[in-house]
Length: 111
Image 1 (cartoon, one colour):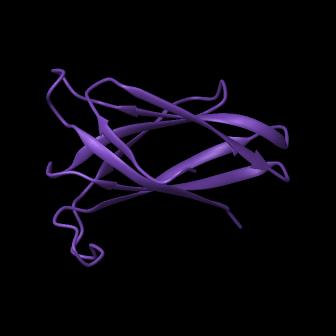
Image 2: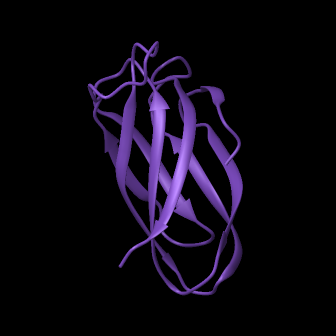
């Protein structure tokens, strides 16, 4: 995924493509900057169900980053290998609430 999506505000979506090689479970890890404890984000692969993930702030921030959160609990089901859309959704109740900056999203196939 391209690095950094700034000002990912409440109920905003950010779509990008991912290519998979096989059927199975795809483990998605979202790294983001946020000042909100227990931020919430939705992760969806194609037309599959959205997985809601709570993202606690972690003490493992890269040097120079004051707030860092790693959301590490999204298991997405790949039914057909190939290119598909991943949608990230910021969850909040007001336009200025829970603004995030998505730093990176990494994927691994679950064993």
